[in-house]
Image (cartoon, rainbow, N blue to C red; front, side, top):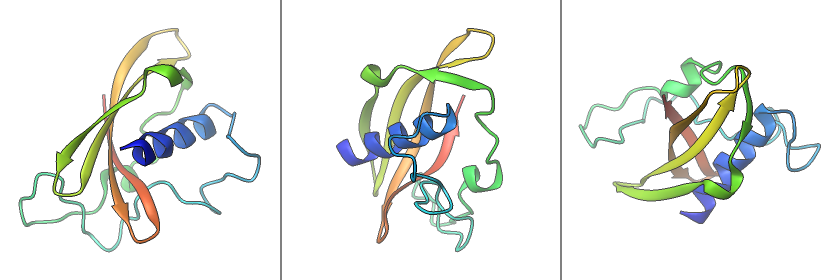
Length: 115
């Protein structure tokens, strides 16, 4: 789960304008699971869909900072990991978000984020 937490950390660092490395960009090093093929199924329903975050890339627009030292994770089973992290928006409101991450042949990717 450490790799999943690092993936979310990189994603949020990019989002707030402070990537861990200047060349760490989505077009070069994708962190969001692709929409196709539709193989997103964290509930193990047997009916995979497209990764929701791929369809809604602006789901976290307005995030200004995140609590890097408070990132936690837990295994969900069937290859998915929930990564929890407090994020703060432009109004100063901090809320916990849950990122659902899975491992692919290309590394970990984020497929969904919940409010």
